[in-house]
Picture 1 (cartoon, each protein chain N blue to C red):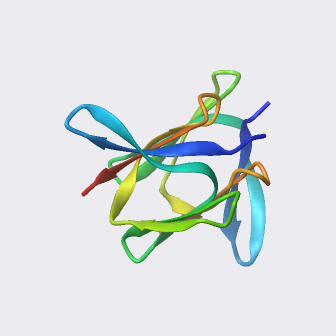
Picture 2: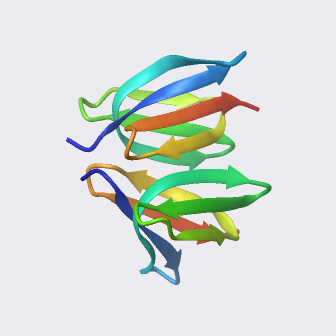
Length: 62
Length: 62
């Protein structure tokens, strides 16, 4: 499977935010995420870095 | 493999921009991309939508 987990970067740490992300969409200054399983979250921040080979999306607060 | 192709959305069409993207990183209002093969590009715009299951990153100009 080719989904990735989303983490929030804070104080030098990466905290798991949403597993198995399929969709990521910036919307009105926030980041909408939807997992493979239909779980949806809206993160008030921005993308810091995505590494698809590492299956990793890192978000951070603005 | 779990990389995705990056496309630029323009006038209702999606035009291939970079194949086999590994890294995506917003930097100074632009989007830095690096492929599995080490090819690097900087797109002057933003992420429109990412669908990992579809292996697709869609960018658009601001």
